[in-house]
Image 1 (cartoon, rainbow, N blue to C red):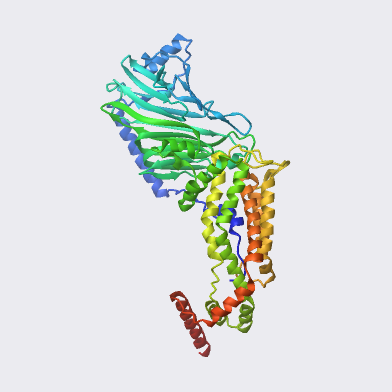
Image 2 (cartoon, rainbow, N blue to C red):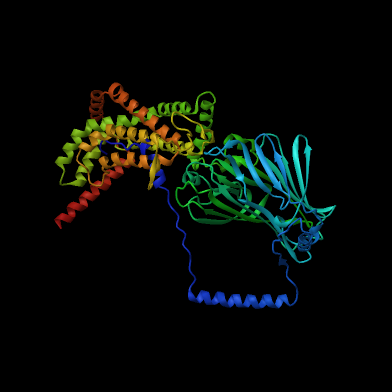
Length: 623
């Protein structure tokens, strides 16, 4: 390996992004024979259905009634449509639940939350953060009754009663059959909490509900845009769920439509980047149908929604009655907040990254940055954290530069071997390996330190876009470290770049360019080896990719790369000019050559394979 080292720190973002494998969905088209079989089967089913209808009348799904409460005829029609539940007093109003952090508005019709607003947060354009507003969400149950009706709770009126219990607000909404028979939605809000207890239960309805039919639960939501860049926000907007024994899975963030069916579901998170709408349950949902539809096609200032989520599941009756304890969470996607609800494990819905990368992000960088930002401005905290990370990795950096120095010292001898055996590639490789072995030098020793840094760099790459602590925190000219900074707005849009110019990505790109110039200058002067990367091309490509890709990314991440590369350049200059002594390294290598060096198993195996190949080559020539 010639004297060179790809700067993992400067290109890791690009390698990770462009290295993500995109899954392709193949639609299996039925053959003509299968179509004929399906048609015959459908005709048979229709004949059986027609025969059954002559014996018994199937429940009929009623059209959703449109009711004018000021019109007695309309009210009468409504009562007729909902049957026994017409006992409920029809009042088309709402009830407010609120504490210090959360405002909820619950409708009498449907008993569902029709407005959810964060009290302490605003969007990029200073509008309060809404998770539910203007009909973007719909929650309800669908059930059959013994008088052959299929009703939906969205069509039913509930009678609200708001009380206080041990300092908590309790809202009971009842769709009544009589004073002692009802379907109840019960909300309980605690002070200073985003989590709201939610119970669905029935009383005295064993003879009203058809126990042979399931009670279907449906929850839909369109994610409201909150960030300056809708594409960037959409990249971290996903449906995440806990299922099948604490497994955490996600639907696709990029495909137009992703659907899945899972079992034993504990919670469902409709994540909207820095905010989440979550439905959790004590008694796990046995089977759930999930779907996520992407609504963002391109960067647009007019786009108001990111994704459309849908969940369908069934609830079981026990003894003819319904009882399901659940929780609503409307709040920030913040580890500090989620840790308050450890039993539910909501913190797992944050995209820290997979495997060891996520572990480092969650248990090292997130708490460490939280500690720094508790007494430092957020931008300064990023700078300090970057310095600490680079100093912590300096021994690994030293090993890498030491390997480069050794390879540089051996370069004249390697060049001599290349010239001597230029017509015999196998022999040249054998002699080169012998030289490395005698000198005590491994050509891979410069790559291994870079690989060891990979978990750190990827964890940081995931930290900045998902750190709620950075949201709307300013530094220098950047108004929001969790979004891109802008120093100039363009009158047009550049594909893959945007309609603005961000300064931090420019500074990071310049720093990467100078760092790669210093580390690859000598390599570019060497003769380009066949099959090896063109270092000059990489030197120009990496900063260019950084400039385009990070123009719409979190400015905090660009700030990190800028500071990190400045520090790395400084460390490199100190190591090369004040720590490493090439004369001493050369003397040590010469001493190593004098000492007998025992081959390890790998080296011995490689030498034997090369010798055998060389022998076969000579035999082939004689023939």
